[in-house]
Length: 268
Image (cartoon, rainbow, N blue to C red; front, side, top):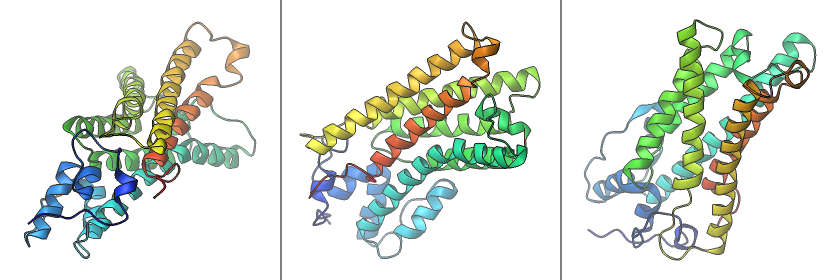
């Protein structure tokens, strides 16, 4: 059986996927594993197994009526949730910290909120981001690998505090660096891929993706400098690491907002 393109979705998806994946619209957006599930349901067969809690939740939505539109809505929602969590992490821990100390002073870094009761939000949000990225499925295997690595690094940042033993600190900072690098990779190399002629909105989205990726890399460099050559008593009083981490997370969140078609969606 041949799956037919869904009316009203062609314009929104054209130019968004990897090369040579036009034709069946649902396949172009959701990637090979999602496409396989759609095809199997169309033949009356059960869909393939799903990975992780986030994927299971999406699967429950998809099996409602067998319509590929549910697949697309769920996938966009996943991307938006990841974006919301990235933006929310520094805001939530900082606001909770203000309430605990009855002041408007931020900690030297987001990781330092682990030492306060705010560790609950810090660990919880990182775990949620990690599992959503584990459930994320893109167009090619490298999308899956990037999501899996981001999940591992996010969990390592959450499980190994920056105030623990020497080994725990090394794991924490190494995982945090690797996590930011993977998030930059998503924005610079995965989200910017285009199949066919890109629309004007797709070009605009690619500009946002690249800007977000570059911002993350600049923040990584700034954090390194803050811990080394720029570290002075006066400079550290402004807590530059906290603000650089916040900008990097907001850039990450913005790129996933755009990928989830929250903004700069194609005009039909």
